[in-house]
Length: 356
Image 1 (tube, rainbow, N blue to C red):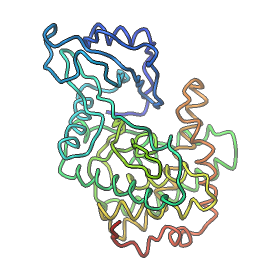
Image 2 (cartoon, rainbow, N blue to C red; image 1 turned 45 degrees about the horizontal axis):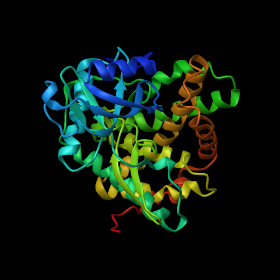
Image 3 (tube, rainbow, N blue to C red; image 1 turned 45 degrees about the vertical axis):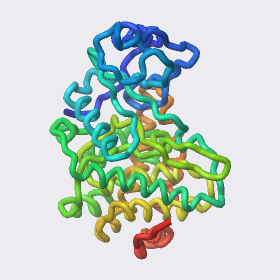
Image 4 (tube, rainbow, N blue to C red; image 1 turned 120 degrees about the vertical axis):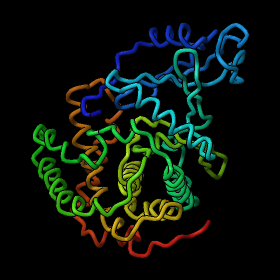
């Protein structure tokens, strides 16, 4: 199944409320709490609600009936097959059973709603300079732990899913969008990255490790709880981009989004701890790490090119707008630096496990 033409389904607030009350047995929904969460190709709605007491319905008691709790209603495009939805639910249940907190699906009579993880997106929290290296290291470790936990997981629907939009296995599919870019400089950069991918990454793919990956590890999907002087990671959300792909690409997504989230002049070197943290928990080979620079270029290129395409065709879809200028700026910077100098900043040649 291809994810190339996935677009957000058309769902109004009124329709979402009817779904909650008529399908999922919510006795009361706090309308003032109702808000849409950012998402590229699905529609996610946060709300606070109270379920009809179990004695009055046929569902299994999950402990939430009769009191207000926080939930997320996820609606998917019709091109998102039911089998894949079941596969994503299985991913979340697998991680939850292994101690990784995530937006666990809860069964109802006719479908599922998602348990809300208390906390904030890490992108919404302040940066404490004194704890930043350790904080980023822990983000990397959390990501590595997720992939390590998914090593023994498989699901046929996820293995069959082809996400042409974001899975770097299908980076060549981006070619059809490059010619629509309005700036010659961006076209030149995108073509350069495409050539580097074909020359440097594709020949190495047969020797790289594959498995089920989250596919969208960024600051909006990692949930934290913040105290006065520290930040603790408490969970992971939004599994809609899960694919069976290369672990290198998971790390590249994390590195690219970490850089895009930073405003520091030295953000290139500030991602070194996230790389170290990831391979503390889930080691990659030196050959795989030697391709990380090129994979990060490909992620940034995808974000810029695909983001501009979305903006041109769906101007009301604001999810990508924050990332587009950061992606092009970073892509230009990285292309003007030598691979060796970038890897030196990332400590690629000296990565060894550390313990904090």
